[in-house]
Amino acid sequence: MIRIILVVLFVVLFLLLGIPVLAVEWLIGKRHPEAAAISQLRIVQWAFRFILFICGTKLTVIGEEHVPKDVPVLYIGNHKSDFDILITYARCPRLTGYIAKNNIEKVPLLSTWMRRLNCLFLDRDDTRAALKTILAGIENIKNGVSMCIFPEGTRNTTDEQMLPFKEGSFKMAEKTGCPIIPMAITNSAAIFEDQFPRIKTAHVILEYGAPIYPNELDKETKKKLGVYCQNIIKDMLDAHEAMI
Image (cartoon, rainbow, N blue to C red):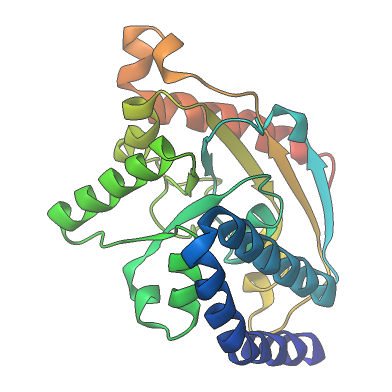
């Protein structure tokens, strides 16, 4: 239990001590918005890496060379654990916003950091609000900010490898032409969810697939882009089984 106590203490201290940091970053952002955005990104990435260190997580990363550093992308991946966010966000080379559930928007300080980091909140029960969120994500990509979404729509708590991908998740790439970066994450639930409320050391594999350019796909493949991308991730997950 000591690991989860340490993680909770660190998160609480980070959020509280981060209040003056947010204020300073806000002032910097008035004159140098890009510098403030990068600074906030690096601060949170450091915090996420430190949490993973506390948890004793061993991370194997494959295919990171596939991630473009000069253009925004749409990251998509399977989702078994809340730690998927920490693991993947800690490695983003450029400004990146995540699509999160709208109930997180009610969490004080955490939601403030998320807004500063270009994250968006999705209400899955309100089609019109969800569309506005996707449109905001499209604007982010047009403005040079990468986006990340987990197309299953929720954390997969079943024994299935993945839940079906929701096709609407890919609109941000279809409308902007940005590359899609598939991510396959194996064994992340072993950190926390598999033995809740305990945190255990775990070996997690994160693999980035080659960029997928929607505009270069044939018409039939584009119609089922979610299935196409899910099959690519499935192949990577299957290959991980011998590595755990």
